[in-house]
Amino acid sequence: MRHHTQRHRTRTTLVPLAALAVLGTAAAGTAAGAAHPAACPAAVAGPHAGSATAAVAALDRAAHPLRTVEPGGGTRDLRPLDRMIGDARVIGVGEATHSSHEFFALKDRLFRHLVETKGFRTFALEAPWSTGLRLNDYVLHGEGDPRRIMREEFQRDYLWWNNTDYLRLVQWMRAYNLRHPGDPVRFMGDDIAWTGPELYDEVTDYVAAARPALRDRFEELYRGLRPTVATGAYIERYLGRPYAERVEMADRTGEALRLLARQGPRGDRDREAYDRALQYATVIDQTARQYAFDLADPAQIAAAMRYRDEAMAANVAWWHRHTGTKVLLSAHDAHIGYEPADPAHYPKTQGAFLRDRLGAGYLSVGVTFARGSFNATGPDGAIRRWTLGPADPGGNERTLDRVRHRDYVVDLRTVAPPAGDWLRQARPTRGIGTDYPDGPYDVALARSHDVLIHLHQVRAATLRDR
View 1 (cartoon, helix red, strand yellow):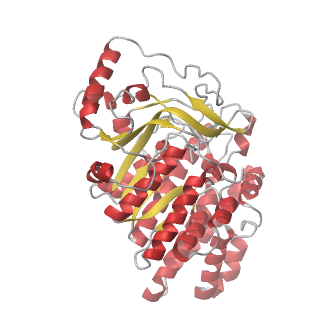
View 2 (cartoon, rainbow, N blue to C red):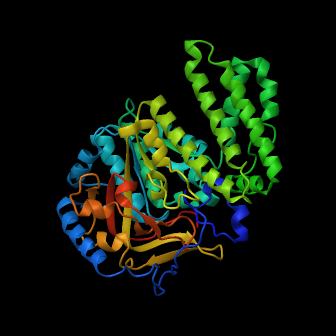
View 3 (cartoon, rainbow, N blue to C red):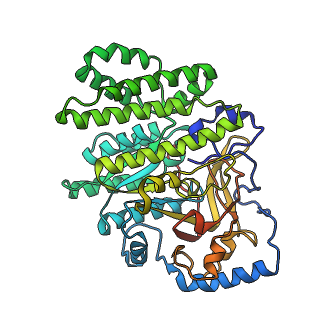
């Protein structure tokens, strides 16, 4: 989850490291209904305008129109995307805001289509691993109430996922599995800001059964770490601990992980249970280690950002390898792409780590929008609906929106010159996290993504329980 944290805001120390944004201020935005000021300087006339016009002509020939972003109905318009995906086993599908309906609905539609046509079976969300397991238990076995699970898990920095669109997707996944019990779809979370108590129980229960001599040691190492309060409160309390204490907690989770890794499975029959316990111990350590960076040190904040994206990529790769399923990964454009928009503060992205691991098996699909609304937290800490008009001249979205299709998909790898050259140049692009104002950031679309989906207009998602 991409967040925005200004350099001198006192709120900085209250934002979980797993949700820290690229530091720096962003362009001005407006609350819904207000006039929209310019977000970035106007583009210089002359060769820039000419190259953009030529790029539009080439994009007109390369773009494939989308009938709708809403799930249901025919999907013939998605066949060009099938060809673009090819044999990729993990595809990252981005979003330019964290709370616009069209982005969520689009991912719902794409996942349903890919399940039916390309054999995809996992929807991965930028949410904690333990949260994903709770939702997966519902999707696979009907355990629990998805409304309650989302209410309990999607708190604080994850509250944006507690929306009507993702509830609809989870319910569709459950209905699909009732019809296809022998070939189910799955839900996973890859993020690390929170690890629920059930994962601690899983690890200690495994150790008690498989390595009883180590049970007391693991209980000691995990002392004070197992959550006893709600997600949001746990994150707040963890961040309130002194830095030295957070480092000491990460030292203990790291020792527990190394201790379990040294044991190995007790033969082939224990392999699956051991691998699962080792991954859960890894996730516990990821959470503790994410909080063991010094927020007062800009270099450590950058290291924390890199660590988080690397951990999320590792979790997706583990899930893909151990379940054997193809994965649609849902996250912000800033995560699923290949190049960071602000490398000084955000050194390497999840998409780049996944490409390192999977090569051509990973595909990045960026998503942009020309205008519309979204939910985000304002400078006063209040969540509100924001509305943006057309992007300024010189921004990527202004040119993308001149293409003859209202909504479309284009393969950035095969666009003919001069559009291909234009797409490889960095220029202002909207990238809004959980806080606003945020962005625009200079992004070279064709260097950051393999495929681009552009939407003419979006509207704020409907948040539940608010």
